Length: 355
Ligand code: NAD
Image: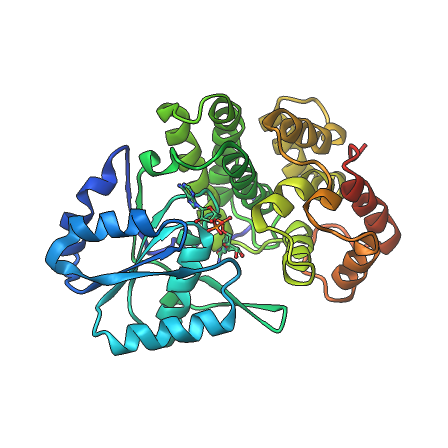
């Protein structure tokens, strides 16, 4: 076994069906008494319901989170938090909501309690991001890593089939790239494989029956593990491509991840043989040549849009994305080859299988 460095993330995780009914007790246990509940406008009602349950320890609801944390939204939220004598930010929602809580934490050092309601995984990472003038900036800071995360699969029941599927594949992308990360290690790889298997088996059940609580539980478990992967090791070509698709072309985050994963994996299929063999085994195929195709077929079976053009990528997108990715690459186990990348991105643009 090669040398490695493993650092556990200092996050307390409370996991289980109906766990969210214990939020008040959990917050009091950690000493939080003036809690600001943060949501998107779409989840404001859920936030107000939670605020009622928190009673005297709730300092208010802030329902203004939006995707990719625009800097104007972030600045207003930071001002609001500073003006309202709070001692904890509680993010109830997906990556957008937790993303806004993270910027408040970055600027104020207030602790975050996260109650994720998608499978994006932001709750387990010290990574923050915001957008300014269409440019997305990301960074890492331990102040933005939530102190406490409460997973309650009941809260995912209202997540529509398409968002459930894409968000689940977004989580899977974190686990897949952790297997061939520059700083990969055996513990995170174990979590990655466990995550991939949990998501692969639960997502098809969920899209067939949104209220299947055991599948929801499995997907939350897979998403938690995937979030640990994302927060613990570096990502590679796939996350770089999606960063450009979101940052430069404003494509929806989870959908862009879901569509592109098959092509990123296919691009890397001969690059890290150990990782690819493990992926092939996890997906139940005999060769790394097939892994990209299996992911593509999984997307098909989940009813996910298969073509980047259908979620907003313009015709010149593939060439432009390939150029930006090759000009400012992340680490990847395989060298960046502009022509091949562009060809694969054209396939992704059209929704054709990677092979
Ligand atoms: P999201 O948070 O934008 O949620 C998508 C939509 O679904 C929103 O309208 C939301 O209100 C709604 N929603 C969420 N949960 C719901 C539920 N249970 N029922 C009904 N509706 C629900 O989407 P996301 O994919 O979770 O997050 C995307 C954002 O998170 C991106 O900006 C991305 O960059 C960021 N992100 C950051 C990290 C990180 O580590 N920093 C990791 C993953 C994602």
